[in-house]
Structure formats: structure tokens, C-alpha cells
Image 1 (cartoon, rainbow, N blue to C red):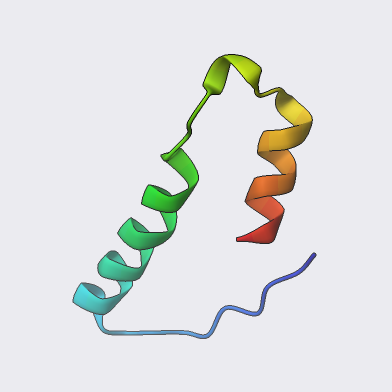
Image 2: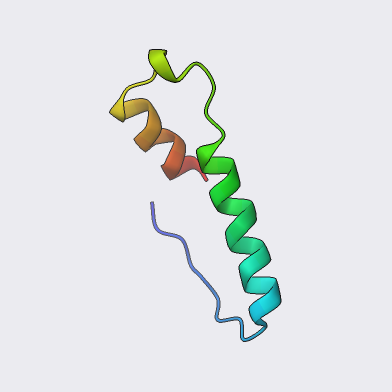
Length: 46
């Protein structure tokens, strides 16, 4: 899946968006039951 990312020169907004996206990706629960395929599919959904 490709995402179109628009240019944003507002550094504060860019950092806030980045933090929000990364936080969603690293909030893992039941990690011992996850494997690479599950993590990859989760990344592609975001």
C-alpha cells in the first residue's frame, strides 16, 4: 500500500504527526503471541 505524504513545512505539526503515528505502531499488546506477519500487516494498515 502506498501513502501519499504531503509536504509540510510546519516542523511542530510534522513532529506531532510523527509522534502520533509512531506511538500507534509501538503500542503492542500480547507481544509474545505476535509474529512478523502480524506486525507487518499492522504497519500497513496505519
